[in-house]
Image (cartoon, rainbow, N blue to C red; front, top):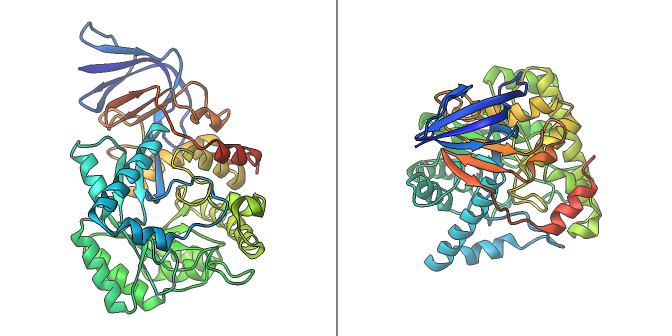
Length: 427
């Protein structure tokens, strides 16, 4: 059957997109087959959008599926929870079901593609394969399974496995390849929760020889490497030794700028988790003064680094780091808003970044990321114009993923989370 979406206002996802009113989109066998003024037949299923806004499905470049960002008044013991989650086949099955529910939470909010950069053992590839086989609904997934780190490094005990030597780290790359991952994730620096003193977020933890060995092995196997990095030293060391994408990032000197350009690396901006850690009352999150101080450093440095990158022609992508406190799978639209407001891009550029630009970073721009004939029917439809206010995307009218239509999608939300985030909407 051919579906024809009649009378939409098209936002096609391209860099210089402008609203195209009174546009029709035809979809057949999951692909976009025609755009324009389409003559329909009695065999078509016609969906009259009455001027609603149709755009590409969002692409979130940085998520963790074992957590959903549900409000907590104190940090969780992730090591203990992970040990229990992986303790038996029954508990693994329950965790896989939970990860799928979070993936669907994102899909129902209009995120049709996710890059999962750190999960529990090999559960992410298992979920991806079930979705690709049509056994489950879900977004398109690119996954790394567990991340590779060092002893006592960032997120060790949950989504990170520690390597005590270069040889051990390389063996992990090989093991991940055998699990059929789409990319490798390295934890190169610490995070805000790892820092013991004020002013020391993003301490370099993985050394250059291990970074290079992992990147060399990954590239030999045809895999790109993403890396958690939150300091200028970490950025430079990561890119110089082969990392393809810097996740989070920091301020950039000319040395880092030159290194990015030399190795054609990209920066993935993730403001969503840093904002609440930096701006909320500390008791809301149960964090110390030092953690909040360091969170402000990370938040401000990511903004400065993203601005500098864009000014110097470095590709910047968007992700949410979902799973962090108050960072949910259904709030990708907030990342677009933070990017517009803090980095200073236009709303059109923010939407382009979260669609076609992110698809280009993933290497799937010929498949998705924009509304073009021949591409997959990945679409987000809103009642109002997101360029007036990205809150228009918070309650999608309809979502289409690989041609499957989800009418009036239902999203399980956390009222307290959105209530707290809304207080800082203009931050």
